[in-house]
Length: 330
Image (cartoon, rainbow, N blue to C red; front, top):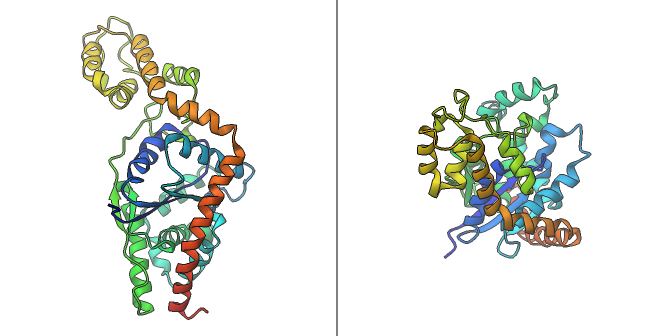
C-alpha cells in the first residue's frame, strides 16, 4: 500500500560521498517501496552558491545520476529527473516569490550561518537567489503536491517554511490547491570524516561513494584514532576513535568485540583499520561494480533521466494549470 507522494532532491555540487549515502540515499532506497517518489537532481539549487563557476555542473549531474542508480534507486519505481528539465519548477518559484514575505526568508535559521560560512570562503552570495532558495525548495515540493518529505531533524525548519507557504497560498486564493507536506524523519547514520569532523567536501575529509578497494583502504589508513594511544601495547579508547565509529556502522556485528579488544590493547590500530577496510569493501563491492558499469553507459543514463523528466512534466504541467487558474494567471 502506497503511503503518499514524496519529493526530495540533492544538489550536484561535487563528488558524492559516503556521508551523503548514509545520510539520505540509503533512506530513499527504503522509501521507494512504500511511497510514490519523485527524486530530483536539483541543479538550479546548486547555482545559489556556485553561480560563478558552472564548468563542472553537467559532469556532476551525470555522476550523481550514476551514484543514485548504482546504489539501488529504481527508475521504474521512482520518477528520477533533473530539476531544470522541468521548466515548471522555475515558473512556480517565480509565482510563489511574489507572495512570500521577505521576513520569512530572513528568519530561516541557516540563512545567516551559511552567509557567514560561505562568505568567509570568499564567495559572494548576497544574491536574491541565495535568499530565496527556500522558496525554490517549496516550489519543488508543491509542484508535485507532495504529501511527505524525508528530512533529518535539523531540516525541519525548512519544511515548516514550505508548509507556511502552502497555507498562505491556499488562504489567499480561497482554494485548497496544495496539501501540507509532512516530515518523514529518517534515522540517518551520520558518518564523520576521516579526520573526525563532519564529513564535508569543503573539509577535504570525505570518502567518495564510488571509491574503489584501494582508495577505500587508503582513506581508512588515514583515519584518526585515539590520540593518546601511542604504542601498540597502550590501551585505547574506542569512543574517541573515528575508525571505531565506522566499525559500528559497517561492522556492527563485531564492533563490541573490537571495542573491548581496543580497550585491552589486544588489537592494534593497523589491524583494526585493515579489518574495517575489508568489511567496507565487501559491503560496497556490488555498488562499486554496478557504478563502473553505469559509467560506461552514458546513453543509458541520459535515457533514464529523460524518461523521468517526461513523467515529471506530465504531473507538473497538469498541476500548474490548476495553480494558474487559482491565481487567475491564465
